[in-house]
Image 1 (tube, helix red, strand yellow):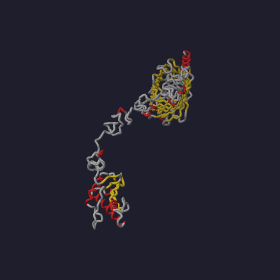
Image 2 (spheres, one colour):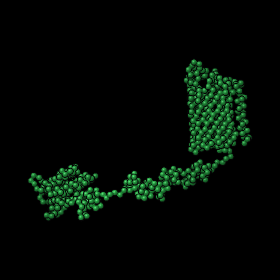
Image 3 (cartoon, one colour):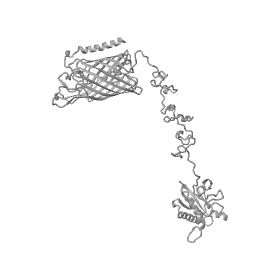
Image 4 (cartoon, helix red, strand yellow):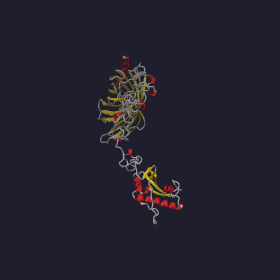
Length: 578
């Protein structure tokens, strides 16, 4: 292992030697500026701009494609001239890849491409000595990197490493994406994993072989891992400070004065791992200060292939959640769970929201704690021994099935015993009243007790126990005999006690003596006379209809005097109820 560390350190030293060998004294020209201070970390690192000691196994390839957009990264003013936005926006596409070796060494490469840049227009007129932002795509400087983890292993709370990155001048030096000269960035890396928090701190220098000043580069950040490490939320701060101030050559032409020497940015980020190796990420945040290259705002979006770390020589754990269910049979390999006869639930945690010991899929009341009462249909439900739907704990009468009549004072109870009823209010209790819906006097005859003395309700008819008599007057075809007003009064009372009868027929009948047409006319007059009498005594007219049937509906033999007397009658029939 010491040999590996020595090899890595040698590689980093070689890159540093290139930078020192290409000192400013040997520079062929004044150089240029690559505006973006955002240098993406290799795929697999927990943060976007602050590198970590992460290596991630042996012979594990990783890669990313990242879109980076910055607002107002270059704003200058010259003398009395107004402030000019030279580069108002810059959009870069970064393509990178890495390979881990022996779980100690990481080699990486990254190439930026400027997709679009924009500014205010001819900047020369502003007197600031800077060319306009190009409108066409431009290639940036290629970065080659090597990283060595010196102390700690994957997952440790503290790991220490070192790295060096070599930037080759492949970019356009007049397009704000290339510096026109080699630069090397050696750094010391600290980081690790503490419970669900991954953290990184890095510090080093950006050593330039051009005439532009070298800078100190430093930063730090942390991320919280959630949802079985599939979701990561983080924040990071990174900055560069010029080692000497004065002036800066932007594109190899005139130099511009530099008043602010520190560029800093803050990012808030999120990453999602929908598959084992696929990582989607986004970050955004403000620039802090107004130094050259500091944007007012930066937004980043990323797609990466970054399999989780697998140390060298370590075989894949067939049962990573240690639940005793190995391999593909475990439907939740990273979450401890019991065996299940149902294949889709095998090895998965059993949810029990109400914590009553009955798993939610088997719990008939998953949000109410309870052991049930022996009924499989109520497994996991609060006990309800009387089966009225109200748990015993809330049931004031747990052994008596309630019907909702108990009210708030007696939930789960049946209706409280009431006083014996007397619905017609005649002073006789219903259980001893032969006619509980019609008022009547007491009687020694149980069949007549509490009933009207002259009428009876028989189904849909009010039967008259006495005939309605009519007098014979020359100027009135059907005058009611005063002797019959008593029976009609009881008819009126019975109708009044039954408001549910909405349509009642008063029908009159005759015997067959005489002319049939005369009998029909006579019966109609008598029916109307009775109807009119009931209306005069308080019954609503719309409830009553009169109908004369003549001799068409006999109920007895019309050949005898007794039969004819029975056929001459008044009937009260209920036609409609509500």
